[in-house]
Image (tube, rainbow, N blue to C red):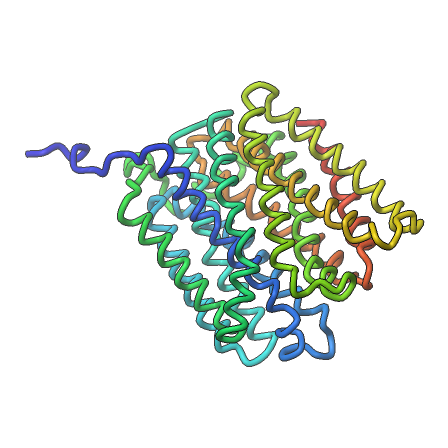
Amino acid sequence: MTPPHQTQKAPLGQAEFIALIAMLFATIAFSIDAMLPALPEIARELSPEAPNAAQLILTSFVFGMGVGTLFAGPLSDSYGRKTVIVAGALLYCVGALLAFVAPSLETMLAARVLQGLGAAGPRVVSLALVRDAHSGPQMARIVSFAMMIFTLVPAVAPLLGQVIIAGFGWRSIFLAFLMFSAVSVLWLMLRQPETLAPEARRPFRAAPLWAALREVLALRSIRLSIIAQTLGFAALFGTLSSTQQLFDQTYGRADSFPYYFALIALIAGSSSLLNASLVMRLGMRRLVLVSFATQALVSTGFMLAFWLNIWPQSLEFPAYLIWTIGVFFMVGMTIGNLNALALEPVGHIAGMAASVVGALSTVFSVLLAAPVGLAFNGTPLPLMIGVAVFSGLAYLVSRRL
């Protein structure tokens, strides 16, 4: 009789494994960034009296993802990584279909929360997949390479969204989400072996889950990582919420927005490659500190320049564009390292740890970012103030890691 271990799929090569992880990560980016060109039409159709409220289509998805993240990891510790990713993808697709037919903004937001709940499976469990096979700087390196590939999706997502809107209407974007998820999950099912052996799984019961939760939150490094990630994500989501309105209403570049966004994403995506090349030599903590400190100083300088009208009018948009690239660049230099620092001491409950870190940092970052986005007043000042504060606080927290 053939031993069971000989019937298992062989582990993927590193290149294919990184590409698959990047594809699973990209579900999140595609679900957010492809919506950006649709926000003006959604505002006109579903919330004409409060156009800023259309931004909530982004943050509602992120909020649902944060809540779902708390459960996805523990479920994957009990039932295996692949099972939970596939189940989450199915829930995501149901949410996409509901959003496609939503008659009101309230229904749309509820559908987006459901989409986010489902997207939590691919988001957090894919990190547990990496942690099952790697740890420490090597884990950070693989995540950085995956993030580098992942940045190609936000580079093309707004342009793809614009093409879909022009050809089929903004609601068809949700059908594109469904097809994207189906392709990535099919790839996972056919090629990726399960990384969590049955004997290593933990019962999905209240007592073991509570014990694991207490073990995770008892670690000072994890608590600090959660706070730092919360602030980093708040800077990112605040920027994403306001970026389309700034390009459209402030600088009159709605038509060219997808191309500028692609430029932002591609340049900022190099941060992951830079991080992967530096992390083994300089260490994760130092890179996090330098990145947050630089962003805090740069954002404060740009904020003062805009407030005091130092920029000539011809340079105002290029200055805003460079600043936005810097925000995205900072995220690429910090989040992967903070995740690796958090998960390093808890490999035996990687799913729970990834869930707690991802859920708390995401939910609380939305609570910080949404007011910054809704404060949009036709200028980049509210956003720059928010990012400067978030980055400065993140630096102070990270010094204690």
